[in-house]
Length: 264
Image (tube, rainbow, N blue to C red):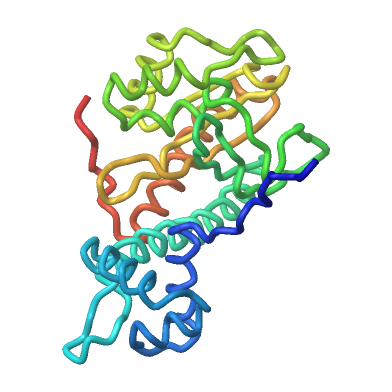
């Protein structure tokens, strides 16, 4: 019996072709003709011409007066946004280390990854206090003070939807899971510039966090002091002032308006 099945043909997606073009332009570091790009990508010239037209129309590429192809203005906006985020983290890391030295406590810098909070920087405190989280640890947003702050700038509908999708019961059973309650708490803490969670993600552990906002007032990162609960009463007033100030120093260092607040 004859086998009529056909082996699947290998196809290069439009996204892959786009990345090929970007990589080639980056490697050569000069405007190029469509023919040169097609040759370097080992792709049909007609395919590259069509893709270039689409990318030029969307501002991802541009054409010079000699019809050479180069990066477009839209990429500059993406690059500036990325550089701003990286600059923010560099400054946050400096303030994280300084805050840990001043307080003697563990300090973390956290960011949002979809429905999760992720630790992207950590400075160990003095003594033998340790937690299960480390750089790269991801937990649901509703488990931590940082997670609440990272959604605080969104409008109510977005906050509720985000928590409805991501909220999960914590291992300690103390994390709030109701989307509306989380939304209200998230906004309140964001406006106050401070959020506190005790035992929600880990037994006997307290997190005191402050938002680090961008120029539009959106919370991009958080500065968080993580400490044993038995030290909370003694150190809360001092820590809350210092963590707010550390976050504010990061905002000022990258030239962002520390007073910018997105309306509820």
